Amino acid sequence: MVLFQQKITIIRMRPPSRQNINDGLQWFGSSLGLFNLRDKDKSCFRLFIELLRAAKKNHGLTSDELAERLKLSRGTIIHHLNKLIDSGLVLTEKNKYVLRTDSLSSLVDEVEKDTRRLLEDIKNTASVLDRFMDS
Image (cartoon, rainbow, N blue to C red; front, side, top):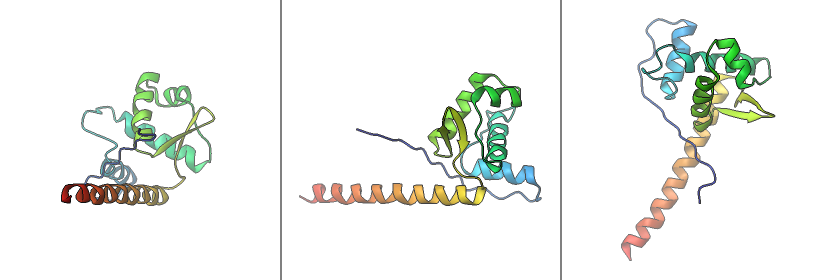
């Protein structure tokens, strides 16, 4: 039985040639597989930025607050929140959504820890399977 699933996607991309906050944040999120070409109005990107701003102020936001601030439907907000929750970057606390950490650097640290734990689990399972295959 799987108690918790987390989808971690890391995409190797060339960093933006010009350094500005918008391009840097787009690259950051795209490198973590958060934003894709189908998101024409950049709604997931805008949602991520709003959650980052809220994290800097140490508070969470409801889906209704996010929808109102971003002028998006609640359904769109929920769709993107679910993706961010599945990635392990967003948590729910007291019916509000919060970024897992209050800084991008510590967010990368958390993704790195998650990835190491995941790879360790895969490695352990591979060892067990190897033993089964050898017998």
